[in-house]
Length: 211
Image 1 (cartoon, rainbow, N blue to C red):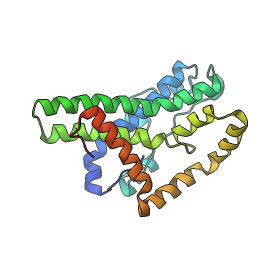
Image 2 (image 1 turned 60 degrees about the vertical axis):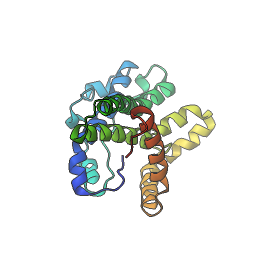
Image 3 (image 1 turned 90 degrees about the vertical axis):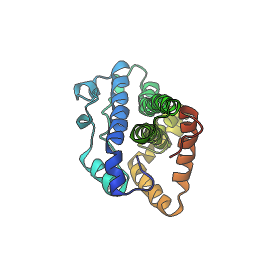
């Protein structure tokens, strides 16, 4: 995931929220993979809400230093899945779906706090929980390998197109880094992501919601 308007102090304040969002995201991947017949993540101890099971050392350091980071990928053996390509796409969707569900839940809490006229730390925490979870979901749905959205595109494409598309996989992370570098100068990608996040946030948390 990436964070707009990065600064070290803000990252310290955001750390527990980010930790929850990343952990819940990876937990959902592992949980659904196991439900669909692949025990690999379960055997690796990844069906867990313990953040230390999911955090990547370098990804966490990068998140705090430059505002872009990642968790350890959940191991999935496609050959154990009952319907390999479809279930691979479903396990990929599980992570963003979990974050959207979390965003919706925290949006309801935010609405409740507004109705109760409770502000301050509690409202700010609820607002951040909505925003960070939705940001993580939207970013991961970008259809570039190895992001989750690419697995869905692979499933939807005709097989001959999918075979060509998957060849992007070795270069995917470099493409993502390149887009982030380009975005640091133009803001095109972050503006698009934040447009989606803020509109979903208003849908879940009310018209007064903003990032």
